[in-house]
Length: 151
Image (tube, rainbow, N blue to C red; front, side):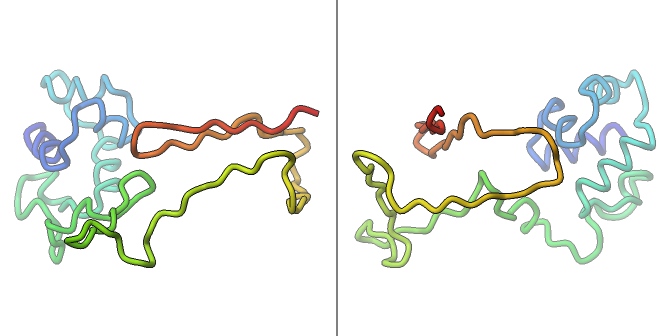
């Protein structure tokens, strides 16, 4: 089973550390499996199958059949957009983005902020929580930090 786990890591392009993090298990567990010190526990197998639903359990456990479940297209695996790996719209040959997808610049407003609606959100939590900082990261490796005004 060690070789099949290595194959999954290869297909997913994951290091042992990232694989363990993705499965939410201790990194040493994966290290021991890959080094042959331990066999995978039922928990490890269950987490692999839960996290990677396209993996054929029969293949993982016994090495029989296809690595993928029947009906799974390997080319579509990992192509689901997420918060940090979104599809960037393709530019046309002139370099311009489609009209409805052009970037909008943010203009800073001088002076005090105007036209801000205040909304109170009531929660059942009795703790007095306040936002202390918001950080926005951009794909050009820059970021902006916003902090609420001190009262």
